[in-house]
Each structure stands twice: as structure tokens, then as C-alpha cells.
Image 1: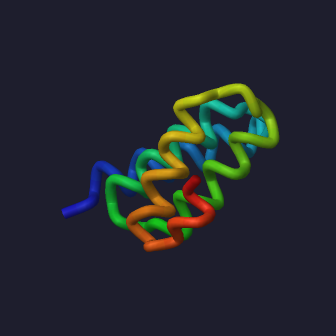
Image 2: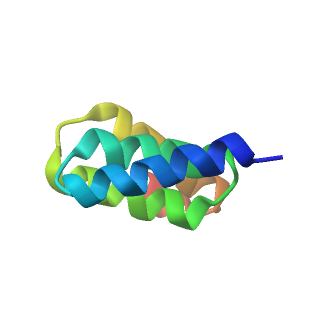
Length: 77
């Protein structure tokens, strides 16, 4: 069911081997995790993206969505 998502996550992993500091790749991987319900992994990937681009509001939004789904409301604020 998640074959294309898994392939996309694998592509992100390969890209991160080339440039681990690319915030957009971390964000893309986090978005994929969010879409497949892997919420803890999504939060971790969003956190990685924020290390390299702390001004990306879309990363904060995605992380907030994941945290709400995890019922971690205080962290989501």
C-alpha cells in the first residue's frame, strides 16, 4: 500500500547521504512520514529540518500537525 511512499523515503535517505544538511530533504521525508502515519519519525525529521533551516514555517506547521495527532498538545503550541 505504501510502496511509492517507501520508495520516496528511500530516495530521501540516499539524498541525505550526499548532503545531510539539506533541510528540504529532511522536510520532504518528514512529510512522507506524516502521510503514512509514522508520527514520531515525522517529528524527528521535522526537527532535523529545523536544525538547517529554522525559519521554514512549513516545517513548524508539519511538526505541529504531527504533535497534535500524537496528542502532544503542549509541544504543538
